Amino acid sequence: MRAAILLNGEPYRGEIPADGAYVICCDGAYAWAKGRVRIDENLGDFDSLDETPTPAPLRTFPAEKNETDGELAVDRALELGCDGVVIYGGGGRREDHFLGNLHLLFKAKTAGMTFAMMKTNGAELTLVGVGDHTFACGRGQTVSLLPFGGEAHIMEMKGLKYAAEELRLGYGSTRGISNLTTGNEFSFRVERGYVLVINSGEVL
Image (cartoon, rainbow, N blue to C red; front, top):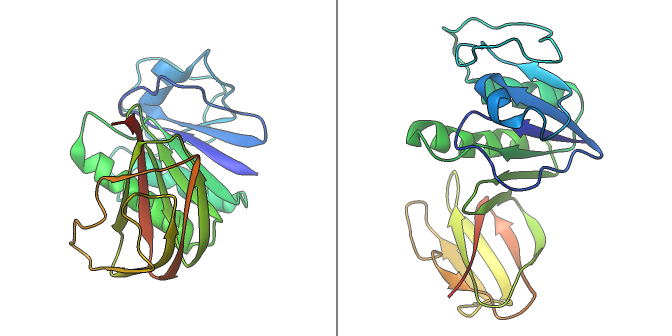
């Protein structure tokens, strides 16, 4: 079972599949998510919401706390044994929360989830670790590969215009930004580290 986590950033305009997912709605996200997707649990401190959400929260957290509502939702997903997470509404509005939400992907992956993704209105962001990875795409889309949390070592890139048999990305390097897909999928192998894959869907 995957977790779908709805956050109070820029309201997500795309489809939110709920089949096979446990949907956790955080605080003010309820204002844009209600009626659009089944909500299994409302969670947070509810300092950004002017109505009582349905279903009723199992617990209301204090507004002054160490964790964001998004981190509480990831913790809840881990508690439920979810094998992956997709975050919606995690972009826009506040850059500090956006960067923090990217770190939630890291928390999910390092805690053992098999996939960790965030979908915004402008991009699909997926954090991957050591192993082989293949992504579906459209021809000519803009894709960026960024090291996350430290140096990343990538091997056997395929389906990208600027491909390499071996690519080392130092943390702080922008070398992996703005690659282009050449077909309907691209792939690579991570030998070391974590890579944030950003597919903007934009065709140049």
